[in-house]
Structures are given as C-alpha cells and as structure tokens.
Image (cartoon, rainbow, N blue to C red; front, side):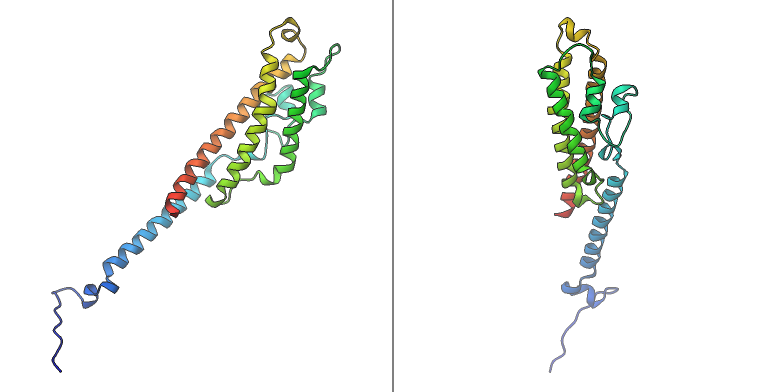
Length: 202
C-alpha cells in the first residue's frame, strides 16, 4: 500500500486544512454568536432603563384635575368624582358634558380592569403585548376623553366661557394631552427596540 501524500504547510496543522473542522470558521461562528448575545443583552438593558411610571399610574386622578395638575396617581378620576369637580349650581349636563362623563367612565373602567396588565415588559418578546395595551389606552383616552373636552372648550358662547366647569375642563384637557404624549413617547421607544430585536432574532 502506497503512502498517502499529506502536505502540511509550515506552522499550520492538518486540522486547519480540514474544512469540516476549520478553526477559522468555528472561531468566526463563535464570535458572531457572542456579538449577537452581547447586542441582545444591550437591548434588554435599554428596555429596562425606559421610564414605565405611567404604565401603572395616571395624570387624570382627582388631585391632578382639582388642584395639582399632572400629579401621578394610582387610578383615574371616576364619574362620581368628576361630576363633583364639574358641578354647577344652575345648569344641566348637556350633550358634550355627558359625552365627557361617559369617556371618564370608560377610561376609569379600562384602567381598573387592565391595571395588572399595565406592567413593564420583562424582555423584548413581551414588547408587542405592551404596545397593544398602550395603543388601546391611548385610543380610549383620546377618542372618549380628550376630543370631547376640546370640543367643550371650543364652545365660545358666553355660557361656556364663564362656566364654573371651565377650570376643570381646562385641567382635563391639559392632563389628557400630557398623558397621551408621554404614552406615545414610550411606545415609540419600545417600537424602536423591538425593530432592533427582530433584526437580531432573524
């Protein structure tokens, strides 16, 4: 049996020349895997560093709407509390005012029912669920509370301009806008992180 001719370059092992066990390939794969894990870890750290205070709290609480605007509270004002804040000695609650009452009730119920779900995502996989809850919350806040409040404030007749309800309506409008803007900013940050996570996970 003739001897097999094996050519080995000086300073290079046979293993380096065998494609199946190519050290360079293995090293590159290991490096790529480490880089991916490192980037995922960085994403998780950025995720945990976001400000989630508003997820489980609100700026539409009783204190915020009565005297200390933009105070963070555990629950929004309920309908009974809101009616006290906007009570007038003479005058009925007309269509727009009743729409705001209904919106306050919807937002309060949503917040109470979903509060356990309004928690910060523990990892990037939970971002979509968190975004869905934020989107639903913004929808109710904007459609059922903010827009009717702005419609009420846009009434320029003397009754609305001098109404004792106006200070509470003005505070409600300001608090709604602050809450919506803060929630939207959080959603944008979460969406950016999730896009980066999706690219790394592919």
